[in-house]
Length: 85
Image (cartoon, rainbow, N blue to C red; front, top):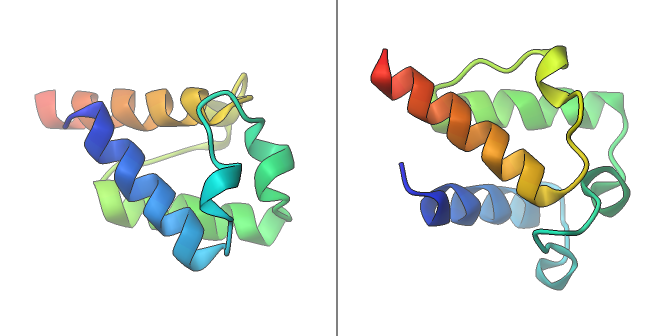
């Protein structure tokens, strides 16, 4: 799956479900600060990503995730590894 498709789907979900302003989402923005999610919101985010992309995310996947770019790359990596399997 192309990076642009992943970014589009993730951004669309964040805007619709988490009411994030589109202009607040940028590749270099801090994911945690921008989203301002509590622990239950993170669970919802993980479930949505898993359902949308057919991948499995675990807590360790989020280690080192600082920016939206990091998050997009994580999903892209998971999607490409799932498709290759």
